[in-house]
Length: 175
Image (cartoon, one colour):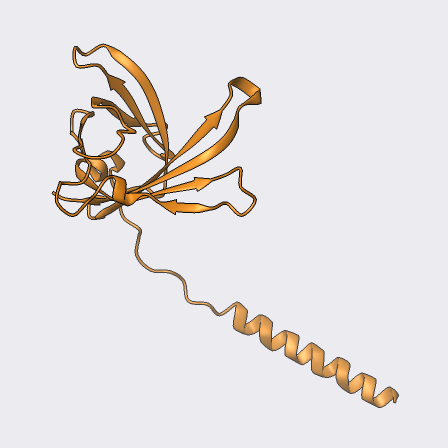
């Protein structure tokens, strides 16, 4: 029995030594990642709504409803949001509710590492109206053709506010 235990211990030591040797012989990465892309340039362009999902956050099963048909009937142009280089935006909508305001300024919470897409809406005379904040699904690169943003609708104010509905918007780049 003692011989069996010594054999198993020796086998384990040899296996551990071999594993350590193989783990230490990994090839070193070559090249560089390059310069980070400009997050603002990635957003510039016209984006057309392709999907609108509403999620009921108060429901235990988080029920989702596809409400895209309220914006698109196959005839009219779906809602479009145009983000300009001068950090202004405009919305063109023929059907459905406008969750973005007609026009204003756009930006990020952090230009280097954005998490939120922010719209500062303006009235037609240029007077500031409201600030809207949408969570970015991902950072948009200049060659990406889709954008995903989410809006958490709160019920109540201050520390007693609770999330009730999540609106998920999917857009496709049209130019």
